[in-house]
Amino acid sequence: MKLIFAGTPEFAAAALQALLDAGHDIPLVLTQPDRPAGRGMKLKPSPVKVLALQHGLRVEQPLTLKTPEAQALIAEVGAEVMVVAAYGLLLPQAVLELPAQGCLNIHASLLPRWRGAAPIQRALLAGDSETGITIMQMDVGLDTGAMLSVHPLSIAADETAATLHDRLAEAGARAIVDTLARLDAITPVAQPEEGVTYAQKLSKAEAEVDWSQPATDIARAIRAYNPVPGAFTRLAGEPLKLWLASAEEGRGEPGTVLSADADGVRVAAGSGVVRLTQLQAAGGKRLAARDFVAGRPDLTGTRLGA
Image (cartoon, rainbow, N blue to C red):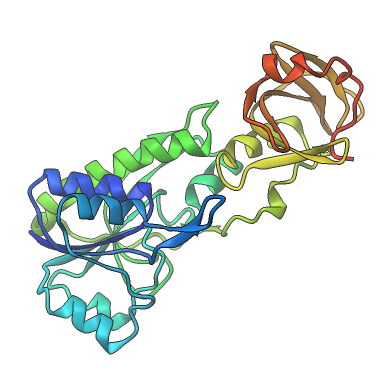
């Protein structure tokens, strides 16, 4: 098929590669403008742009799709379908109507659960045992369009947002190729009215650990915020990032380090104990618990979060 592809991060790049491998004609790729990144704040192209240029594809980076110029850019291609994956721009009705068979979105949840910006992290925070990919016919609502195909995926007990992202990216890439191959035979199904939840955008403030919460909730949050925005607490007033954790039985004053050894840093929570297995001090690197505690013999008894 002749496609326009619109996407920005690694999640979208996986789908673009799969569409190219499947032999689709992609005369135009839309992605977000280059953004400052790194210590030098140099402009960095999106993963989708890097991949598209490697394949010699035309790349455009409009600030909005609401202008006549941007819409003319899309119209002149004469695409059968626009495939959208984590693009980052709203598609106005005029754009939704331009491709002959509309615009399809690769969404990383089982709609109508977790519509919105952060479905992967919100599924983990909620303790969901299952998520997946929904290929959706886009409309002007926020992830409200009719479903073309649904692809469930189980969530492992030790899943982080990073590992779940990668598995969903692979699943999304397979799902869009499969859906396009069967598109003429698929009857869109309206989303159920019940079970709607919204995956609000993540904030750095919410990633600060509240040690009065149950250990299961804290450990889940630490995994959900890995890698972005990164869960954190404070050690002697300095930020301490927390990357991997699990919950255990035990009790103590919330925030108190009960023990620290090669197996983990055990911190009392509102109920239960959080075992931290990967940590990062301010200005340092991510370290396994064994290496983190090696230079901190007086860690036991310390109060985190103060």
